[in-house]
Length: 151
Image (tube, one colour):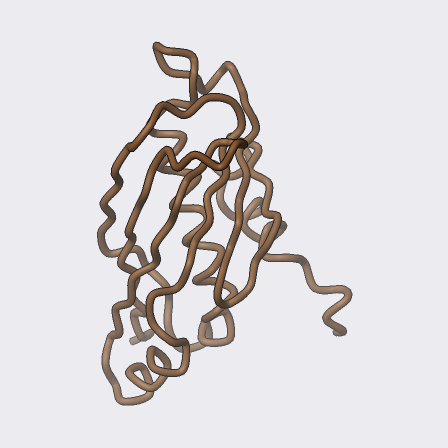
């Protein structure tokens, strides 16, 4: 199968993660170094002040982190499953309108895979910045992921 016929990370996440479809998340960039995911403004997911609900923003950021993890470590799925271990989010400014989450991997892919090769269960952080359309940072999240080896 050529890479042209393979589904994109966004398509795969949309197909396998119902919340991605529910929130209509748009995957605009997915590489092993960076993932960018946009959530359109949707009144069904607003909070009491008219912006995206904190839970929707958390899901947006977590989805961006999942996209980078799948891009960086998708070739390891035959021997390990990626799992989020813990997450911390800080809401910095009021988010209004569409918001975008940009995720970046906190450790080199080769280093994480080397830990897996050594029989370890590697952990690695993914940092995510959430912004309004004007570039203002509305939230920051750090998610620690692991690759749990299959038994």
